[in-house]
Length: 120
Image (cartoon, rainbow, N blue to C red; front, top):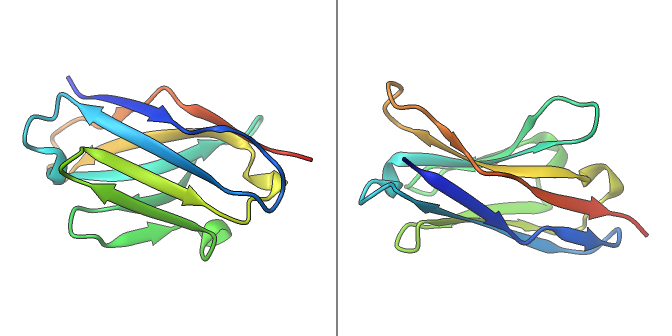
C-alpha cells in the first residue's frame, strides 16, 4: 500500500512563497514508475490539477500557475516538491499529492492534503 505524506503548507502573504513536499512510502523500488502530481481544491470548487512530473523530468502545469510554480522530484528520496512563488489569494486551497502509476491497471494514491492560505 502506497502512502503519501504532504508537508509545507501554511499561511503566507500575497507575493510570498511556499514549498510543499510529498514523500511516498510503500512503493518499494518503483517510485520512478509513478507520475507524481499536485492537485488543489478550493472551497466550493472541484479538485484541479496544478502540476505533474514523470520520472524523466517532463512536466505539465495548469495555465494559472505557469511561471510561478515549479514541480520537481527526487527519486532517491521518493519525494516530490512544489515550489510556489508569487502566490495570489486565488491560490488558497487544500493541496493534494497524487501518485499515478504508468501502468493503468494500478490504482492511484492520494495524500491527506495540506492547507495553503494566501492572505494579508
